[in-house]
Image (cartoon, rainbow over all chains, first blue to last red; front, side, top):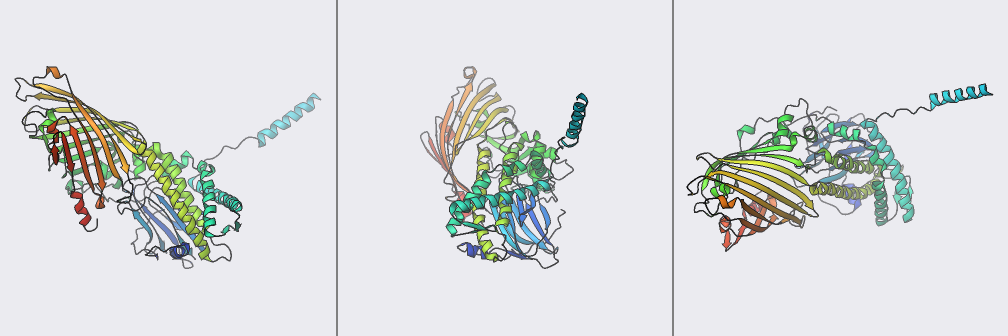
Length: 130
Length: 462
């Protein structure tokens, strides 16, 4: 539960342009390669919010909360989805979700805020490969 | 025979007592609720997807839908409709579960904003991210205070921040708000260094020096007596935390189910279906958030306000005002109505003796939010129509002539980049002196505009 401070690095592999069609979009899905024996931790930072965000992995809720959280993911061998959903209705909202492998630096999966005039909701996912 | 009956009755009673006593249901923990939710969501999705696929003539094999892309979108849409309409998942989110989410403590507190738009060193040491903004927002208002001055400083104080600042624990903004709902009803402002036109203090604009600027000190106290338009209020928790949380919860868990590769299936196939469902879920989540915002925006709210203005370099002309302020959403528009009673004492204005003015002012405006996103994403063109009437009470007893005044206006705020807007307004009034601040005046009509926001379009980073 306790969250450690980590330095942030660049966003995980993601397409910089918006390709057409599901195949292209699927190809642009971030991939988190988890080496054997390495821990995967999901880290979420949020501003003020009243609609709980949720992070799930392989059909299970990992985090549902209104505040900053970081939680380890019990990774299964194979390809599985890590998904998240955020909705905002409070002024000055912001959120970022990322992950850390083996306690290393945080890799940002998604970062949104009202200050950047981003949409007030998002549903995203990454492929976890272990 | 009778003995056998007693024995039989005894046996039945013992059996009922030993096995028939219902167990007292233990409330589930948050983790247990989430686990039950995940399990039930998976079951419901399997059932609804299979039914929708069967109705569309498609097949579902080991959870994977087969068929043309458009047909799959239609089936996923139908299955999602049924999932959202099913009340079973929402029932899992009990009041205790919702309260547990609200009460969760924040792990870290980092002061990031004090909301002081200018550089006032007094705000530098405020420790709390959520409370700091409302503890004491000290700002030099460099745009327009009382439409006249460029140097006034206003200090806004919230009772909520004053009491929540003493909390030993660290909570989220929603928790702090709900724990001090009574204190949250009160706020106030103190204004130093303002220079206010005399007409705005006395209510007389017909005198030769009605626009003379007077040094003044002002204060106001506002109490919300009915309604609450703040989404952090507990009256909205069922909509935000519970129902809004259902939308995000379904979205994330369902995506992991749809995107789970089946045995022997290439991951790319699963991801393509996940992309389809992601798009559908994002649209529904957006609609859900918009509905929550709309419901809160349309809710009525009534506040009462008391205010005072006192001259700092002259005696007399103390002005006290009592205002009822009402807001409510009407369809796509907002209705605002104010009723004010203002009393100013010790006025001379050339009369032989000092006198008082008592003025009732009723004003209202309807603001429509047009063309959302047409110019700037997430913003609207705001069109307002309104008017006000100021009536002197006890006019006959005053030693100088006083005229009741009225005005009607319409204004349009056009959004521009960098958060700015271009306001244009037209005012029609029976008081020509009320038009002195307008840019263009013809008879009883004044036109005002402000294109200064256009410069933001050429500011890097806007």
